[in-house]
Image (cartoon, rainbow, N blue to C red; front, side, top):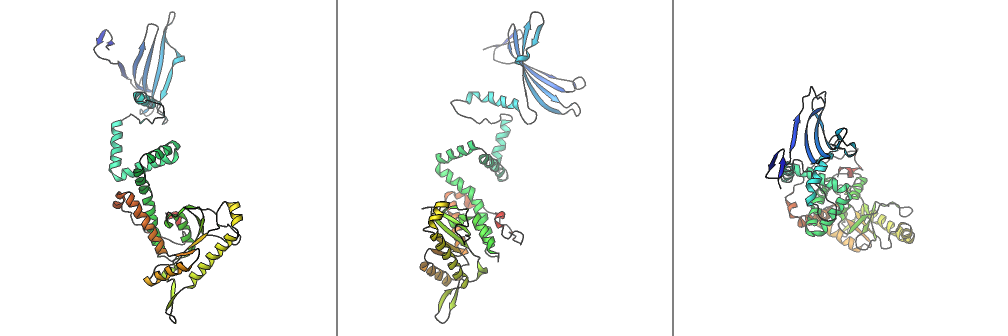
Length: 388
């Protein structure tokens, strides 16, 4: 197809664009324009004009404007603009209508089939792609890029659906991504926890932290129940729903006892006996179990919770010696519906969870979590969860 340019026929398809720069003294508001005749007939023609608007006081470019105008020829008046068909687009106030239209027109050949499409801005595409590649290559930039993507996914329902579709399409990839997303948060929480258990903090500090990070108890639990007073006279630290059967476990959090052994030696019989703090914790847990069991029908009817097979887990103390660990194992074997867990054992569960994440995404083995100097003073005791 040839193009006619004035009185000349060009051997290729082309368009003629007129460009004009305007003097500021004579045109203080318009720096220049580019114009293209879209259609030309005997009685009408259409013109697209791209205006560059400047600030008359500073002389700086303020914005751009695109107008589509139709001119009609009248016998009595000649050529005039038909205002009925005049359209004006602008890029001011961060609403770049011109660029959106350009992107749309450029993408039309690629929009095939029903559905919704995301069109990437075509302006400076080479530079934009280069920036994206650099962001992926350099860690500082990649963090910002991933943060923007996650923020978008969090706030957009369609993005969430797209993420779900990607996860279902490639199970191995989704496992690796989930492991990567959780690894940093979990590793930081574990480092915080290891620091906390070496401190002589109030019981409430440990309760708040483990409530925020109940993942440390393992995949055995699927949900934190936001109810504490399920029965008259008791206030639970926090109940967890078991993954397998949906029944309730109550978690009772004591302190690490500042490293104090959970058992004392009865020299007269050469036997290890649990200390008073452990005995009291077991008695408290049994009271909770008995109270919930007695109220099981009312609780199930009112709260929709199953408590007839409720168990209790008490977190208290530290591992000290091998003999102490063996004594705890024997104690747990004799207890009914109650288990004693030390803070070291809970730490071990969390460490194993992180190892599973690394197994699902081996690249995580190369990740180093920066150690932080966690400061815990009177102002944040009881609010440790805000640090995680």
